Every structure is written in C-alpha cells, then in structure tokens.
Image 1 (tube, helix red, strand yellow):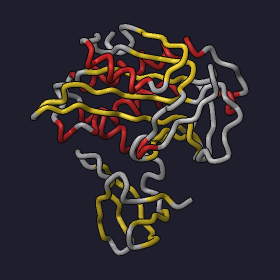
Image 2 (cartoon, one colour):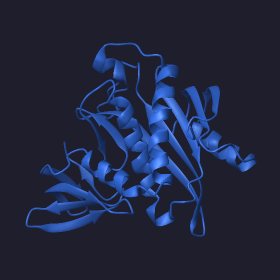
Image 3 (cartoon, rainbow, N blue to C red):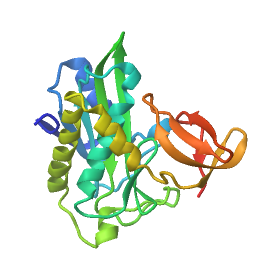
Image 4 (cartoon, rainbow, N blue to C red):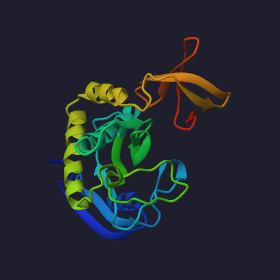
Length: 246
C-alpha cells in the first residue's frame, strides 16, 4: 500500500496542505503519507476559497505523493485519479456520484467533496504533489454561502466512523494511484470523462462572451474541458474560464 502507508494526525490545523508542504521541505516523508485533522481554521479551496467544516464531523486530509512518472504536461491525471478514488469509495454508500470538472465531487447535483492539488515542478519532473481532500461525512448543517452541500449522513441517515471511512477511502485512492504508476492513464482518463457531471447533457454555461448552450464531451490531457456548442463549434476552457449555470 502506498497511499495510507503512514498516518499523521493533528487535532487542529490551519491547513493540512500547508502542513504537508512544510513536512516535505523539512525532510522526505514516505510517499503516501496522509496528514489528517478534525478541524482546519484556514482550509484551502480552489482559487483562494475556504473549505468550511465542523470540528470532527468530516474527513479533512492531505496526501503526499512523488509522481515523478507523470510528465508536468499531464499533471491533471493526478486530479483525475484522486477524483475517481473518492467516487469509488462513495459508491459503497451512495448513488449518482459524479465529478464536476475540474475536481469537485457531486451526488445528485450537490457537492459532497472538494480536492485541491498543489504540485512542485522542477524542469520536466513533478517532484512532489500534495493532494488535499475535504469530504462531508457526518455534518448536516452548512453555512448559507456553501454551494449546495450534502454529506454522507444527510443522504443515508447514518452516522459514520470517520477513521474507518479514511481507511477505506485510502484503499480506493491507492488503487487509482497504482494505475497511474502502471502507466494505465487511458483507464483513468476514460473513466474520469464518463463520470463527469452533465457529461453529454446539453446545458447552459457562461464564458467571457455570455451565456451559451453546450455539452461537455471530453477533457484534454492538460485538463481543459472540451465543450461542444450549438452549431457544432468546439471550444476548450481552462479552470477559471467557464461557469456552470444551474
């Protein structure tokens, strides 16, 4: 086992991603080390957003990886693998799990998990990757500004043991990471695309020109989402260049 080979628990942390980065700079922790906590005072989300979570209710952790086998131009494969690992774990408890590009995990159109991956690149090598994950497990009340949140407990009515959930999730993540190591990136990419939220569904989006109708049908090797617009126009978008319209 790589992911979950070592667990480091911190009762409270500003950010497990920050702790992981500091740990890498100080020494060389084992690949697959997981730093987890009950509460983050400054949990990180994409684009500077915060990840809000009640103390002790959810899974908040960061994985340390050294994916030197992945070229920097294909670094989005790491995000794909992590996303699929989370979906694989959730499949045992809930239905209709999907990935909202680039890396939010949704169940029935509501956000249950978020991922923030920070890569350290030197030349043509990814020296290290820290993958932060927040998964809503037992929390049932969320801040009003949260984007349509849901938790495992809200869906099933059960209260979960977070330690057991972390162990099971680590095993699913480990399986996907080993696929990357084995060079099975085509499996990761194909399954990621097939699980995309609104995949092949005609929906409304907004870009710099305004609202338009289109459908997601692929993701490039660099992580750009490929959308077919009405009129057969094809366009690729980066992380901050397009917005879903509900």
